Image (cartoon, rainbow, N blue to C red; front, top):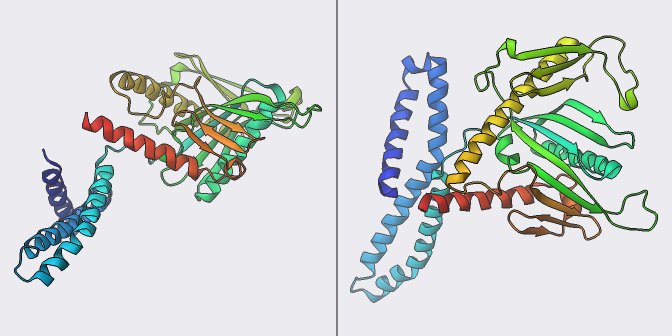
Length: 357
């Protein structure tokens, strides 16, 4: 099917949806109405671009006719306008191609973001705290809601690991390429000879799982309650409020102890567990898909070093797409959009290429 035939069908469907959404019998069915409204809003940008494209094509056709006129002045004017119209047409076609790319059904989901200190001891833990701050500042700029679900501090003022829930518009679509090993090169504050040290942290980005996404049987769970503990093992709570949940089929363990209420800690732990299980399921699916065609930026393997933060050179390098920016000071303060935009653009180009082959 040609792209123009496909666009004509989309426009027809858009008009049918518009009629249905003004039907009182549909409006009265809340679930159906919401579903059709979502479909309508998804098609709207495509149809709007297509209608402009048709107008531009009509102008091109009209100018081509006028360029054959006997009136030399009229013909010259028509020819003069053609390059601009052709350029506008090309830009519209490129925009439409991007809009027609298959949507990731997870893009609109909220995210469970995990940051864990890796190799590098205290310096890795300090870098983990820096990464968390970077993501929280970016979330603030995006007007997302952030909630720390689980956090383990290091004795040196950094973070061993942290799990944060980020809620807002299209969170997963913005952060899904952040998963992997992030490497830092800088001079630690404790370094007296000015030597650059290399440390690493791992970042995991998991779409929030609804109960319908991951069904968990209670018999597959082992739930333990205990007293919450702080850094160095000191007690921070005198009641058994901390909760450890083990998912027996995969031996996946989640511990939550930040809340004083055992009930709240259990609810948070179940959220994290559900998202981890969905993430594992998706990782398996992605591995199967990528064996057939490469449609993602990088392999998605968490052992893969995806990015280096070089503080002495104020340089950030994303190794998957060969991006280098000498604006690390801005990025680490939450101006992550300049990296994310490049990653998403590269991903779209990969998708377009795979659609054409």
